[in-house]
Length: 274
Image (cartoon, rainbow, N blue to C red; front, top):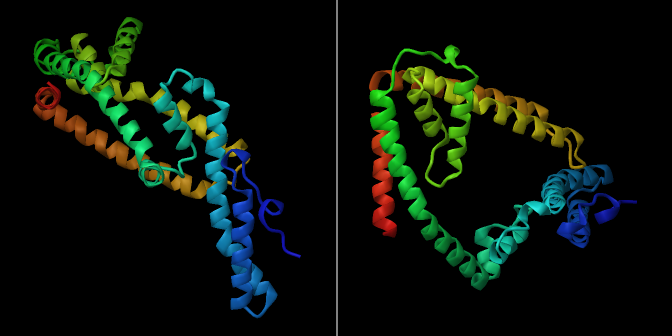
């Protein structure tokens, strides 16, 4: 006896794929029995073919479940935005394949996002220009250059942390605004960059710990911890190399190129949306 569909494996009902699983299982089993004369070999081939498909669906179902468990995050979305979020919640339905299924709805969504982009472009333009002015002209040129990151006290940390909140504004860089505040408080270029990167560590660590907890305690398929560890190691090494290179560049040429980049972005936004 071979179990198929929900009897063998199931997914959260929010993706509604129990019947689909059963039909695909039956087709795969029939094909495996046709290809292999020995039943154990046929069952092994059937298992090898279906397991990746089922696990993929179960991962999507887990994401869908989490969407419904946190619906309070989406209560304030506008109707079009809420509908798009609901339809793409499992990540199996994307903008492109939804466009094939319902082009009129996707066109409505695209118009909504375009209108929002135009509305936010003014704030992004001002933020980019102001950031370039503060970043490259005032803080970097006139800031004192005598303090290292070890001299940062509670007052400095609070001011830099509050400045980081400005990154919520469109067109504002988190690292740029924290480095600007650090330079204003008298940190050297390298110290400002180091502290800006260090400031991101707690948030990244907590987000990573949360994802680890979900993987360890979730109802989905078991995580591939070896691949996760390898990915983390590669990301850590490449990230460290990139930061070391960037610190050398900042020490050599300063922050002026980044300020010029922000002025260029501000000009581009003005040209596109003015």
